[in-house]
Length: 46
Image 1: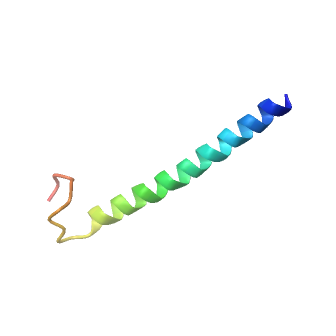
Image 2: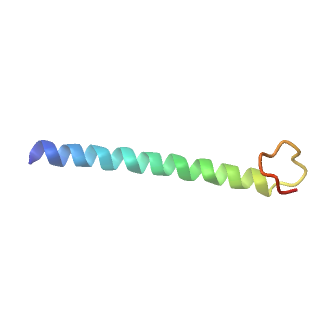
């Protein structure tokens, strides 16, 4: 049980860190798409 709890806690911490990183990445992407005058945007919306 101890090892299982430690493993689950480690996985939870890793997933939370990944979630935070993904959140920052999405925030940066949306911030980039919100800026006008960017011809190198990957989104087809002009």
